[in-house]
Length: 386
Ligand code: GDP
Ligand code: MN
Image 1 (cartoon, rainbow, N blue to C red):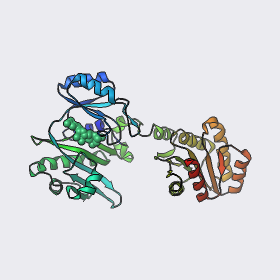
Image 2: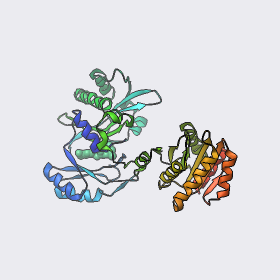
Image 3: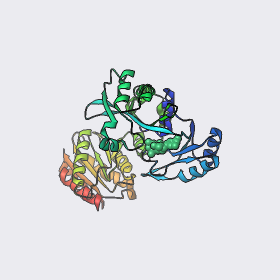
Image 4: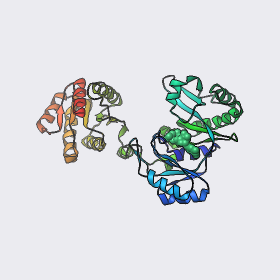
């Protein structure tokens, strides 16, 4: 689960990391009164779970309460890379600071946790890595032994930070590490990590991804708002569906996690030849694949506005393909007009022939039956790109 900036800063503050005083507002009037309470120039910041808000005009300075109200009015409702700003963070403005970068993340390729610190904050870290690699220190951190102050100092020095701030930054790096470990985060990123002229270090931005598998150990429930994906994942969870939203256009349903994973691969591969269409989700409906589960799955997938075609890929085992086909037919009856885009079905395994016959006889105008997985991926990609 990704957190909003204001939520990340709440966790930072709990772990003793300095953040500017501020509060979240949902209306321009609220922004005005928060600014009035702060009695100082403020920054108004769009709360959306994506970066690049500054460039998009979602971060604005306001000298006082009435400017704060105006800026909040401008930013609230703003669309930033497909995310709508429903709230703004109103924060005491920080003046005259240097911008650094700090992050901890899971480096899956190297099977380790990775620390990254840079003297070049504020901008895209990918750009720093490409154009000024010497200003970016990268160090694998052993999960068991963790990050101590000495290592943190080494990171600060290798990143090329001015000597007189290295100690203060190192202390902050240790606290940020505590955030990663104690909150069970998969990502903690601060960009910019600011250093003021009086050498105070504070987090001006914050990005945290929490590990949902560790949710039971925490009181993080208050952070959830189901907004990451328009609530699709939350709705799927409520129906006990194993669903993960992705950012493509081809809805995918299969039985068995392995089959669904390979289906995502073949769809992505076929999509390369059709406008680069990609899978829109992962959905494993498991062994049973009853009509109700099929209907629930199709309903969730079809309510994703990005989906332009669906691939149902089922390998019949104990639940044979004729039962799955009957499930699909019933599901389509339940959905009615909701079956709004082409649905490519590939059945294989136990009673596959019979299953295809059932679908053929039903003759639903949206359904296309294909016998091979590659053929099905090809057709669904073509239909999604059309
Ligand atoms: P992002 O663009 O989504 O990463 O949003 P940030 O929170 O990083 O803000 C973008 C930029 O706005 C930062 O790199 C800073 O340069 C600037 N900024 C953020 N907060 C303040 C502030 O309190 N005072 C000033 N002067 N600039 C700020
Ligand atoms: Mn930032």
